[in-house]
Image (cartoon, rainbow, N blue to C red; front, side, top):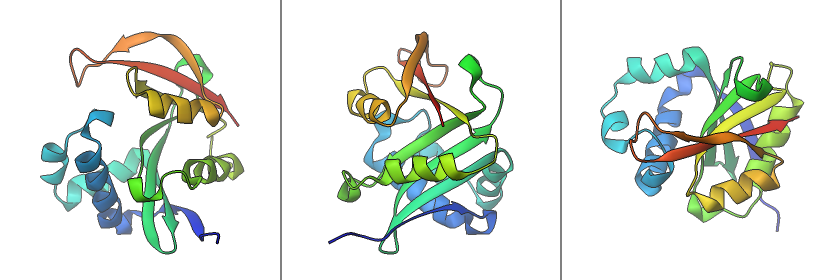
Length: 161
């Protein structure tokens, strides 16, 4: 049976919804992110609302349960990127259900300056790299040292809608 997948841009007044899924991602897969559960779980409502100034938050929900998240910042990025995608995560219980494919179709359907998407992924996060490649992202440039996590490297990837 198919599940109802809904992708939506979450409004700032639903900041707690974004906080909840972001904190789940940091708890479940801390190795995947520059941010930490300790730091972000201590942030107050004002700090969470502030994140919405620069970023749009997309959530994919399955049968009413928030199952995947990403944020998108419009910017002039490396390699012609018109936006930067970050914080990508899906709940392990919902993996393999095409949530990121659905989210990228949503991105492609928007007229918001999201035509060329860039992202950074840890060079040792092979499952994420494979998933991004399947979605049409291509590695660009050299591996780059992380400023937030010394000793780790990320690679940039670009996708055109």
